[in-house]
Image (cartoon, rainbow, N blue to C red; front, side, top):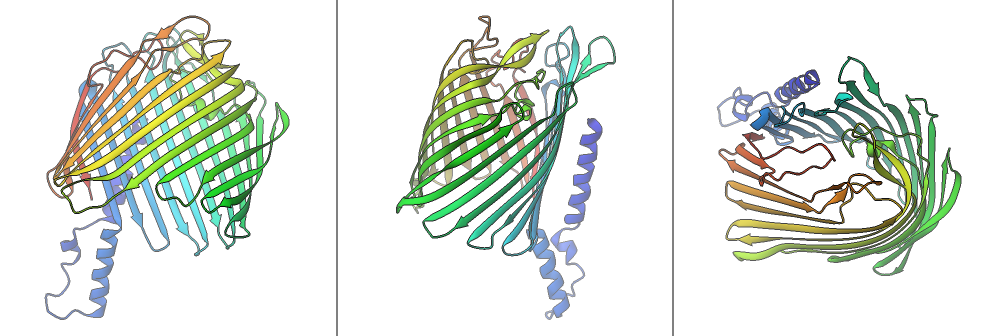
Length: 499
């Protein structure tokens, strides 16, 4: 895993040197210092300026307690018909006060966008992730290591009044556990191929029809039959009035374990409103088990590939206000956002966590009903040349089931404050969740938790910043996974360069 990080770092350095090999002055040093420049020299000078303007590099490196290392690199560049972004993130920590609690996290990503023609665009993407966690004093396994590799290509073709979308992705997920006593490992791997085809036709300014077909093929390494999911929907969109749209149509799902499942969905929403928006929707759907959704959902989780699909009723209402303002005053409201949503869901087979073996998690299906409510508010204010930004959200979840729903707090509150003035930036994040269940059979509650982080950035030069961060600032003793405490208060400091 260290080799992957070193190779990715060297790759970014090599790419940056080739994209940005000289300063603007060095690139132009051979231009004759006379008052009249030739046409060729002017073109070279303009080419250098355009190249420098179209390259953006953001690099951050932090070091802190417990030998914490956190780095993030990003390179973006755009050409006339192609643009791309490369990202690399790496985090690691030694044992943070416990035996065998070290971890490594490495992420590398690529996203491109090619304009083949004015109506045809192609988007290639690639992602590589590696997570390694020490398993504390687990008597069966010493560490967990996860690897994920995803490659995809999407195509969008818009010969108006039609639109055609196509896409293919291939992904592999490897999850293995190293024995605490021998060099043997227990692997839980699978391979997935996705394909989608979408067609949309606008037969008038107020009406459209849309067809979507999605298919997934799974191949499991364990002694489990491969699985296939196919989902198709045909939806018509109709403007009921100047600012309101109705979308309605049938759906058809097929799964190896559930056969055919015909159903439908309906959606009523606002369109074209500047400040206010709302959406009311209902769908009855087949929900197959998606093992990739559980890949990073919890640490020390053993996949259960034998789970069958469930039938799900979902009704939701969303309301939003988005206001933006500009002014020449010293103090004024620059923007205001307010969102509220409510959901009611009835799932015949909800995928719930439970303790499986030696403090390992797995999942099982139970029938359940959920009622969720969520509110978000945010605003930013201009203050005499500085800017203050505030955001907060609250979520409430009520459920009814035969067993306890695990790792789902009833109340969750989060807030963020950002302040920017001249060369200085400050950001504070706070999150609170109340207690939640760690097992569906026994009353094993996980205590409530408060998490607070603080980060500061100071611009020394135009492209050079000093950066500092404190995680779990209140040193709250909490756990996001039953039986495995999270890291305590940690201070990190370092540099950031933006070109």
